[in-house]
Image (tube, rainbow, N blue to C red; front, side, top):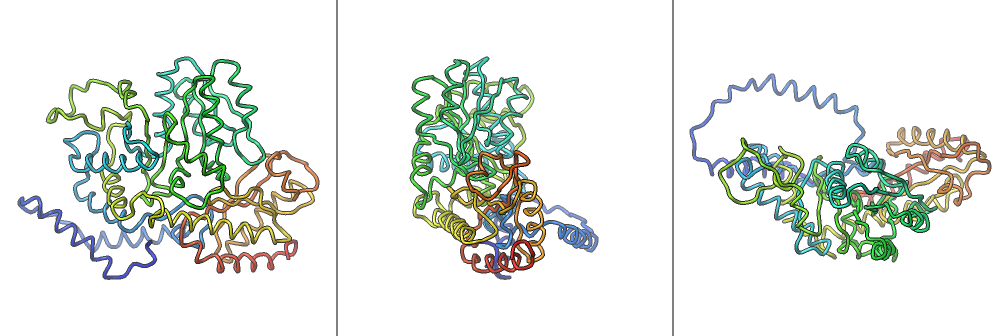
Length: 454
């Protein structure tokens, strides 16, 4: 499904498509006058410098949220870059604007919305900014709240927009604490609750059905940050609480999803969706100097961003044609494989004498701590294992978690600090499932290489 199966013959698809594209513009040729040897030399130097990165594309990389684009997405993106369309207005990207609307409509239908207002953005940060900006316009002067495990972007965006922001406590599972939320709602000043379906740190899923019940009583907006977890609405192998949360998504006011995470797209490709198209009235503006060749509403009229890459829309559209966003389809099955890989890693950790998983993975993120006499020792040992695993070509990540989420695991005897650095893996590639025996063998080798772990 992904790039590891590419052959030399496969690589010929893009030049053929470029020829087809250029045939649609029977215009005089342009003499490029490119210094090909010089360009090749610089490209080789560039490739050498990129070796400093981790091998994000490979299944042995199980660290941060980095997933390679589908080959079709890369080819479609490159094809569009021959023209470099700008999806701000129809003059700049007629075909790519239509493709964006079609692809975004497919995402909206995935959440049960046949009508919506939405568009692509540069990523989840700007998509969330647009959602909170609309929240400010609809609930002027009221606060935004989000779980303390929500992404930090919400507090930062609220500061940029001048919106009062408060954190809601998270429970030991990393989910928004309903008791804490209700206590804050009783103050009567909350306009928007940000619900996270798939926290960045641990993949936790906030209890959306219960929060919807509170909405009927307190009248706030619900914005869902599903930048990472949104596509898991298609997954058939979720536990009941997560399944219930994703099934309730059609009832929220707005949501964000990042196709450049699980959607197999290049960076940056985020998406903002509003259930009520009438919020488009907040985007209205007059532009006396941009585009006048079409009376049709263009994407720049429903976006805070102006210039936006049409190539992102083309890549997403092409990918959705190959892998429709439907339950039990090939794309949905790839998500099931990611979660199964996470569950296998969790099972290995539960048998380990050295590690303890903090949480049962709701999606495909696994977090674990090192058995230690103290929290500070757990920190140092986690970093030591992180470095040692890299020597065995397994690439992990590190993340800090509060005591209330770590202590229930029972891995730490004495608490000499309130936060613990834990090991973290994002099993975002479906290939991780087939590679799990190799990954676990290398982790076992890493265990044997450390005196305190063997």
